[in-house]
Length: 86
Image 1 (spheres, rainbow, N blue to C red):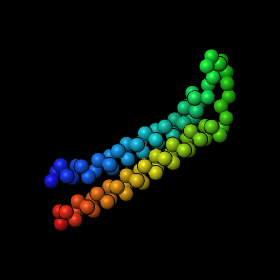
Image 2: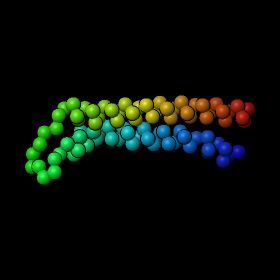
Image 3: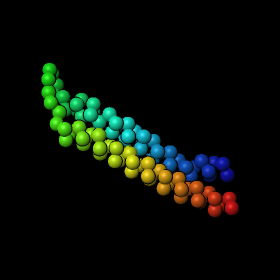
């Protein structure tokens, strides 16, 4: 029974971890955008504001989406376990 309980929450853990990784990337989006936009061997360069915003807001939105998905999966798994036990 305990093994069935743990198996039902694996997808929740995956979505939760993906959400955390996406939020970490979103928080560090400005640094990632600057790193990616740097030409090789350049002493100075500029990174557009829209690129920085894209590297901040898109991963943040994806992270929030994965958190919502993790909550939904957890709720469905929890209800399923409650019906089996009750």
